[in-house]
Every structure is written in C-alpha cells, then in structure tokens.
Length: 376
Ligand SMILES: *Cc1c(COP(=O)(O)O)cnc(C)c1O
Image 1 (cartoon, rainbow, N blue to C red):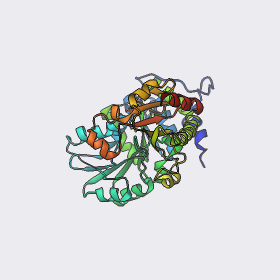
Image 2: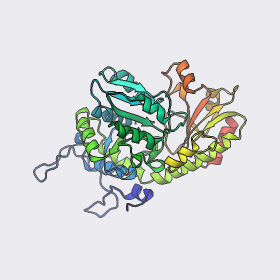
Image 3: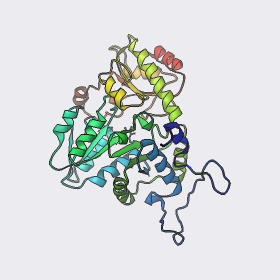
Image 4: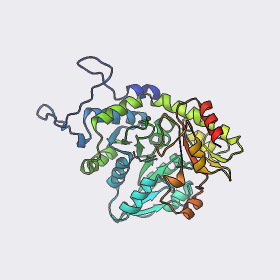
C-alpha cells in the first residue's frame, strides 16, 4: 500500500544527499556525464538527469502511474505526447473547448501535418462515442474545462477509448493530482502544465506526461528528438514546490468553495460555475470522479458591471493570465485564453464578455471577498 498523497508529495522520488545525509538532494547541473562506469547514458535532453528523474518519479507516484517524463513547459508535454501517437492519415478526437494552446496546435500544426482533427459536439459520453472514426488513434480530454468548469465522465470515456483500441490522454492541469487522478480511472496518459498548481508560485515553466512504461517509452523517443527538456535548477524548484502541493491545493479548494458560495448570494453576480456547488449541473459526477472540487471557478458579472473596470478596481486580487499560484488571480476569457476565437463562437460556447475566471490562492478568503465587494 503506497503512502497517502500528502506524504508522497514530500517523499516520493526524493533522495537524501548521500555525502552529507541532508534531507534535500543536490542540484546537479552537469551536461557531461561519465559513461564507462555504467550502462546509463545521462544527458539533459535524454530526460534522465537526477533532478529531472526525481520530479518525474514524484508526480508519477501522485498520479498512480508507473513512469513519467518532465518537460520544459506544458505545451512541450502536450505536443510531444500527441505526436508520439499520431502520424499523417491518423485521426485525433478532441474534447470541445480545450486550452487555447492545444486547440491552436491542433488547428495550425497537426492539420498541416496531415493529421485529421475533430472535436466532440458536446461533453457527454455519447458525443465522444459519435466522434470515433476508423482511423482514430488518440482521444484527448481536459476536465474540468476552461473557463466554464464543465466536466467529462473520465472513466466512461477511458473505457470507450479502450474499446476502440485508441490511446487516451487527459490534461489534468486544472484539478492537479490532489483533486483528480485520471490514470486510476483508466486514462492512459496524464498531462500537466507544471507552470500552474505543481509549480504553484507563478515563477517557473514546466510540464509532465505520466503513464505506463510502454506509453512513456514512446513519448520519450519523440521527446529526445524534439528536445523540450527542463533544466536542473527549474526541476529542483519544482521538486521543492511539490512538497507543499497537498497543503496548497487543499487551501485553494477550500477557498474556492467559500468564494463560490458567497458569489452565489451576490446581486452583482448573474451566474457561478464551480463543480463544488449543488447548482452545478454535474455536481454528482464531480463527487464521483474528483477527490476535491478544485481551486478554479468562474462567474458572470451582472449586466451593467463593466468587466474591465471591475478588474481595475481590485486591490488584492491580481488581474493576471496564468493560474494555480498561491496568489488569487482573475482574468477575462474574451481578452486572454479565448481572444483569438470569434465572438460568435464564444457566444455559442457560452463564454460571455461578462465572464470572469478566478484562480483561488491561499490567502484568507474573507480578505478576498472584501476586495471583490469594493470592486463590484
Ligand atoms: C497553461 C496550460 C497549458 C500550457 O502549459 P504551459 O506550461 O504554459 O506550456 C496547458 N493546459 C492547460 C489547462 C493550461 O492551463
């Protein structure tokens, strides 16, 4: 029986510093490793230096996966994972409404390479079933979705993928392994932008892919060619950050629940999207597949409140594009992640200009509520 998640955050994959018996392993910056003494061929772009491997082992353990690869960014992880399993003539079935960078990769790069891309017309299991083709090789998910926090039934879609003999992948960035472990629900590969919750302090860029050995070997083979590796100092910072992941995410989740419930009582707010609310249409599914409801929420400002003026008035909460840090941040999807999407398509997807996405930090939620109140 492995240790519980919070214990694995601290200890999994970690080493003591052998010469000093210090609890923290050293940062090893070498790019020239000896080869006569062992069969290993260590090199940063082979993704197998000590600092890289410790983080990959730690997050693989958190996700209940056998192996992992640490990348220099979330997009390096996503693009390498997709191209490890797709070649010209293949089809990838993608969930509707993915992270903007992933959609842009699919539209601008996968399609030019002769890879067929299609998106589900909704988020139900039937929408996924309807999307399979003869040549489908990969099914790609992201739940909870950005910015509306809609959910996909992970276990059901993973089972569909196995039935069709395809490889399933999920971007688990929003939930983090503290709140959701999709590999244990049957998804083959779990992907993270470690720039978000895993890093958690809005100061490093990294990414990970976790899964079974056979799949990870295939990802690694491509990764060594594409070269999106993470250097030692960043890996060491990330290792340090993940030691507090369970603590941070627990507080962020608690804050999100309190904020969402409070926002629902406010006249200045037309609608709140958060899987932890009983008003969320998929609250029961959230309870089934998530360990916690997460630190992300979104809400629609009532008509007459200008979303930009509202954000300019905030004092404690920062208007910033990224998410998952210890500082609470807000952003408008129509000015950031969904800026390149036409207004008609945004409206069709339910993303109004009044929508504010919020990433809860670890501050005292009462101070955050007071800040919102004065800005409304
Ligand atoms: C930020 C993000 C990415 C991309 O990660 P980078 O580290 O910025 O390359 C992918 N997916 C989601 C859900 C994200 O939020």
